[in-house]
Length: 87
Image 1 (cartoon, rainbow, N blue to C red):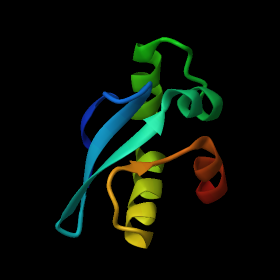
Image 2: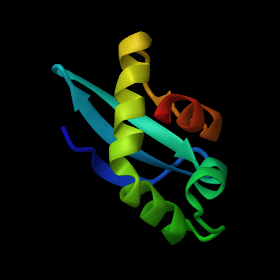
Image 3: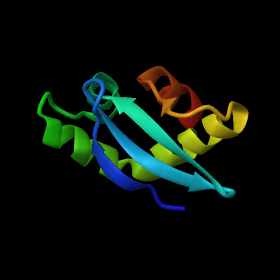
Image 4: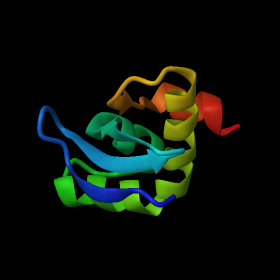
């Protein structure tokens, strides 16, 4: 269930991707600030994409859990959620 269509966010500084799970499709959005704080990305947009792709498995797992808990799209993950749920 790999994420597809990974790209820079259109509404604010972020990276977003398409996720498919159990026949449902949704978007996950991770703000650039949280990619910087949690995954060491710099202020450069390419760095946000690189950090997102490098950590795609962890981000996808968190996004799927969040979507299963509350099936609204897009799922917006913050660094707090990444730290809290990754343990």
